Image (tube, rainbow, N blue to C red; front, top):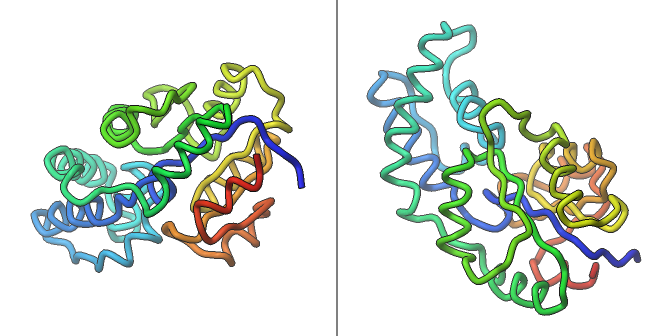
Length: 216
């Protein structure tokens, strides 16, 4: 097995369990707009494409652009009040990050969550970890699965793509790794499942955070 010197983590569904705050916020927005709501479990298949992707996955097909924009704005307003209500690191993530850091592994975060929220959440829960870079969705720049941010992080790490693992919980992360020429790990404690990782070509699949230590 290859040994890696750098790891790029997704955030939602990988490091943090954010699904309840996301689902609660979108359901409130949908109720206000008069649309059907969804069970929290259903949101695991709706998230991953940023706020716009989430809105599109919750609204009826072929809705007008102004309604999409209105939904995104309303959701963002509500999520701004809710995003720290129930969000927590997954079990054993703190220990994993501490051990990786102690081994000198370079760490970073690349999320499709808006950059402001990404930075706030990482600072709140993982302030002690010296991430090389923390990137969320940045205005005017392409988001995952475009490899733009992953390649930026690679340059900051000063490593070759073969030395970096991209770790996430969805096809978006696996495709990002593929597009960046990096190996990937799909994690089974997040929002998606093994079949999706196999379909999109994850290099490895793990069931528990501590398994990641064997790759470094």
